[in-house]
Image (cartoon, rainbow over all chains, first blue to last red; front, side, top):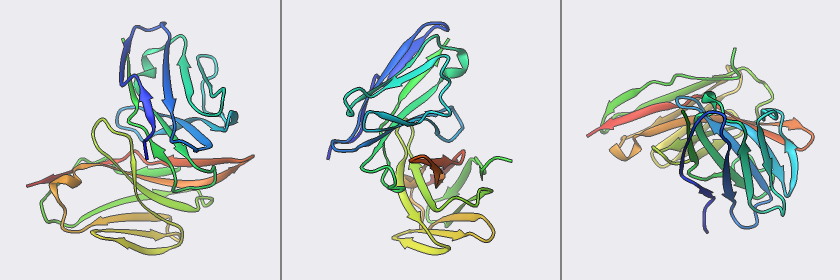
Length: 115
Length: 114
């Protein structure tokens, strides 16, 4: 079974620039999550999708972050404009069903550095 | 007070030692308790999960949950250099409207020295 694919692996941008990350979940996984992991911290949920609908985006800074999952498969997360404090690893995870607490599979993440 | 507290370490032990990793939590709504292992520049991978209070064993790993004390532990027996990683506790609860929250601790960085 192929894992969760994320690209790019690394990105360095200047503050106020925009950036986008891409995630392709495991085939058949209906639920997709984006997490932000700041250095030395645990991952923090940004947004949860069920198929192509948003279930929870309460912790997404909507003034600068946006995410979409148009066809219920792959997803993009965008930051515009970026701030220094956005430097983090952005992890995508997927699960077969939303209520399967132990069924999350994470990708390797995109490491963003904002300078 | 944060929902999940975990000592970030770092923790350094000799090969073969027994390792004890711990987390405390404050939210009584947490139902499932998990331990993830995260190698450098990789995403977290699930090690173990438990639902009820008590112990669960899987090879060299034992997960322990004490709901009355809101305390969970992970024990690693006969630790190996390949166990060197960051260990994240995570707790899962239904947060309403079809949303399920997985809340992580900060992670404990473990080094097992040959």
